[in-house]
Length: 246
Image 1 (cartoon, rainbow, N blue to C red):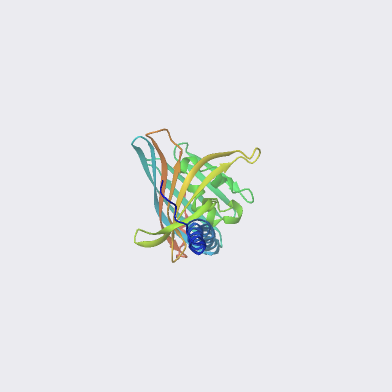
Image 2 (image 1 turned 90 degrees about the vertical axis):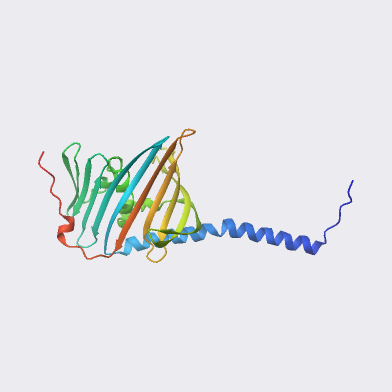
């Protein structure tokens, strides 16, 4: 049996301190930093006077299946104007638009136009998740953060994972998790891992990845990428939409 060599108390203390510091730096301190960046992003959207973007959402499922859709957004805070156009792979189309009096939706599949007058206008976005691959519940929830609780960035346990370039822009990469909760029972469903890339200069979101539970050997993930514009000059034409005749 080898004889154990005693370690001086001073050395044991320094090693313990070093281990504790590594744990703090790699874990606990990252949470406040990640949360702070998320809040700065929420604030950026809440304070902007106008916004526009174009984007793509990639839906991957099964062993190798995928669908790719495109969308664009235009927003003006005062007077209120909004337009989200979602173009689905295969030719379907869904449009949400707003004026100072109401929100409206139109779906090519059904040919139906629905109006949501003030003050009960949030269902125009809340109920449009499925036909827009949940794009209606992303950036619009930040633009109307008070009414929609900035749901896109309701990320639990956010950790700053590092810095990564997205479309030529340096971004904070934040990892966390998200879920939906039934108000009546408090049951948590639709659990998923979330990664969001936030522009280090503007704090606008440039990319978001959501990974859902899937069967072994299969995928279930959604990646949305955004090309945002902060406070662009938008004319009335950017918000005009007339549903095609049935």
